[in-house]
Length: 307
Image (cartoon, rainbow, N blue to C red; front, top):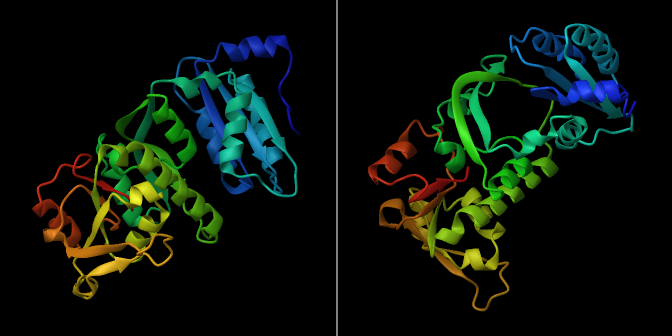
């Protein structure tokens, strides 16, 4: 079905006039697709709109639903572009999104000055409560120091080109929680790799030395993920766990250096900023947040959140 719906010159001229391009990657979305496409039809935006859909190897009735709504949407003045593939396996939401952008006449949107951050809703409402509470409390400044949009590669490239981020304090996005869709190790590893890359490119060059706040599993994993040059900037780990502090140091056994690096482990009050914090927020009944506030540090300058 690749290229379906992309027609002749008249359609191209119509598409080029669109003020807003709605990008919709789809994979096996039959249970929710009617609601999604109905919301496009019900938009009260008064300018011209187009919908660019890329069907990423759906095996359900998503394709038929898209075709049904294409008629309704185009009758209402929304230009619809449909692409996709029917390979045995999907290529992922990032690929599908990029294809939907590429086939859209509004692909110039990638070069706008800012990415918009917003509040979100969850369906069901009580799913991933801690994550929802965290993302909805982010300030505009924290979108860069804490917030990482889902599309990491696009976000990082946007910042490298000098783009900015704007916070809109409205609920503009609905996340659906799928308990049956377990997080894949490959995806988690990819996200981790890009977050480390972002940290090393955007933050660490400004610091001659820094402390990793968390001498446990996540803090040690971050240390091992850094380049050798960034590892040499780590002057200490810090923690509140007396058992970790009593050990005195962390030895990086996999290092090729001789002698192997031995990084001190300190109580957080004995450590010096700046910190890269590998402690999850809203997970200790406020104890971690109280400890951090007690140091009177400035986020983005004296510390960054990595978890």
